[in-house]
Image (cartoon, rainbow, N blue to C red; front, side, top):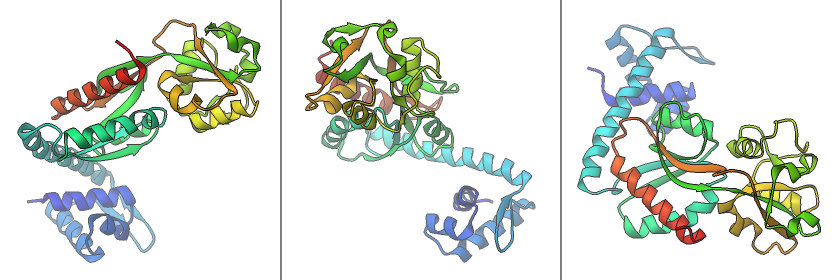
Length: 301
């Protein structure tokens, strides 16, 4: 009978394509890991990996076995967590991924609240782009992810807890900065600086403004903070979400913020989990906390 330990070892090798690195991840010696996988292959009567002195390859049959193994591992972990969550919500290990255009603006409020209200919770937070988080979620590497919608979540389940609009950021020297609101057609697209490709916020801005991908500034930024610094330096203007205003604009006396006057919400924030996720109660509690903290921060009713 194949053991869960053997499955974990095999999945670690598949991830690293390196026996020594896989052994380090699993906190065992390379020989222990190698012997366990050889025994697993002998039990199955097939080769999962082909290996020589330089490379490790996954065989075709190995890929099928590893896919099944991944599912088995996720189901076993869910069984354990079901038991833990029924005793008390948010009292177990929980891994959550958050996109970079959300994490700096909710973690300062979320983490202290969770530490205070759920002291037994062992939370692991990963920051990554939406696509990477979805892959990690599908592979069972994280339990849930905080993403901005609309985004193709590929049949996964979503719990929406926040919606917001965008604000146009410019220097106060710009005559348009004195307005309370501004239409997308009033923006100079040649001076509009957005985030680089692969960031869903860029797509949400383009959609809200109804503009094409090629109608913008040549400069691309990797973070919202970089966008603000570029605007502050007179390189152009930008659009950022409401939740980022206090942290990024406060203290910048030379900058002005003007609400984008286009139909909204311009983006929705949601907690994403796998279908039939064991911790539905955990997800609901997290969403409630996040919504409450954001409502307090931005005085939404």
